[in-house]
Image 1 (spheres, rainbow, N blue to C red):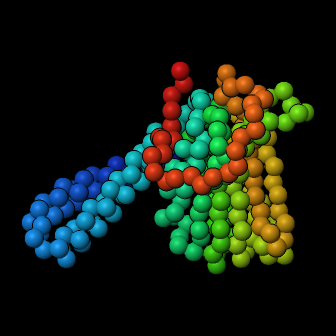
Image 2: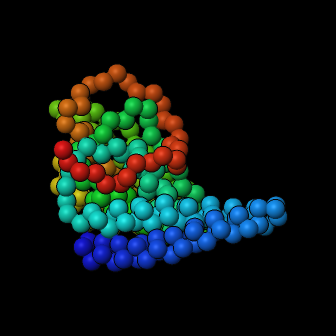
Length: 238
């Protein structure tokens, strides 16, 4: 984890420096072609692409700094939005990614970087099974249970694609060692669902943040997450 973090941080830092030069240059170019609408439009496209790249580099730098385990209150909905942004350029255009959250999902008490790594790990496993394309859904909701004194936040990674819905769904999400260990150390539990013709999913149940009441009123139904305004994937304990 430490080696991967250093490598990711180094690449992201260099990439961010390059984008800084591009952004500064494109501002000058935009001023120079302000009287040429066709060229000004191109300059705007380049500037927008550089801004998106800078956002990606910022997320990678944040991830690279998370090398030690540290649980804290985590806004899981915002983390899923960050994960979706990181995954879209990685998984390819053939896989559609969506992030869903139920209304009023409370924070979880978990290490945010390890949670992010677990989600990315599951997404890569799903990608390997959907080489011809498919749908990847990141989903979260509150999940209290009558048989448990603890309250939980559920984070699911669901995959439905050509390889996932084949006759051997057990091959999907087969290597869950890293994810299982993370969930166990976090004080939660794991559920895996695989069904031929329907797809496969892994659901991580993680403990609620301290101070969150166990039995709130029922939340509203699931709604799509916006990709805008997501918070940092990392946070510090208080």
